[in-house]
Length: 357
Ligand code: ADP
Image (tube, rainbow, N blue to C red; front, side):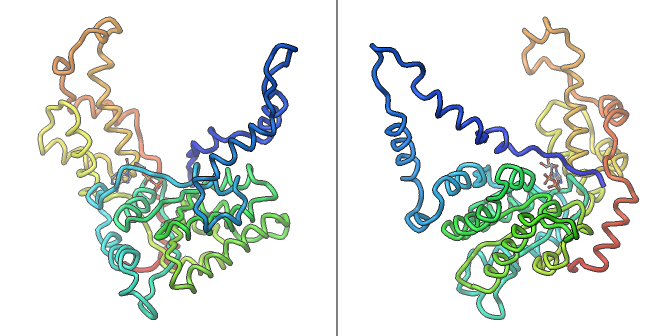
């Protein structure tokens, strides 16, 4: 399956350890007799104390640098995502509302045997709305959203990844209700193999401990949502902990039509209902993300026809409308990214391990 290569912004922002050492060494620049002395130690203490002040007292016993890293890079604020923003997937939405969102909002009603699952797996082709669903659950449950990218977790915190996982769960619990979203969860918690190194094993075990901890303690309102395009690669023990395993398939014709309608509303166009319906049919097999890319490409056509000089002066209302011909051209350039064969594999896995909804 085509693997998504979404680069976490956190990776871009992060200061590699080597760079920090470099900064320390050059702190204050080259001193001369007349320059004021700037103590590197005092500066470091100042900056640390001002950052630490944002750490809740409940987390004071943890490694402050890690807590800051998680609060700054993993905890995300975003524009709330409503169910209406996600086209289709109606039965998944109602399952989540009843099984996940309401329990996070009203924990007093969902205790004991009514206690909700703490691990949810969303699997299916890339670009079908798994991240959107996770964000919408967080928006509706008014939960803090922590998102981690396994590739940065394992590369940046080599040796310390286990401690980072522990800290992540502690930080999430201090901000509950909280959602920990792990994209590409298969790469973090894949099947154990004989040649796995010690630290990867410890990292996995640490995850399992916390997934169990969250599941067994009703006081902890931390939900872990894993997303994957390769469910068959998941470790069996991990798969079992994700009690709800929901297939997020390619959008139906109706869902594709909704996505197109919503996007073209943002530009001047002259497509009628019949043409939009035709487009929904022509995009059979496209993922939501593919349809999104197609609409963006077609919407650029009126601008593409302008010279740079014209573009400098033209007013928005003077732009030509987006036409069906623009979409037909876009269809020649933007093709579907998921094969029928891939879908068959998801369906087969869903038959065995998926939870009906
Ligand atoms: P995934 O996590 O499954 O790879 P995302 O949730 O990140 O996919 O979706 C990528 C983009 O594709 C979204 O930002 C949205 O623009 C579009 N998209 C995908 N599925 C849908 C959907 N069901 N409804 C509306 N937009 C969708």
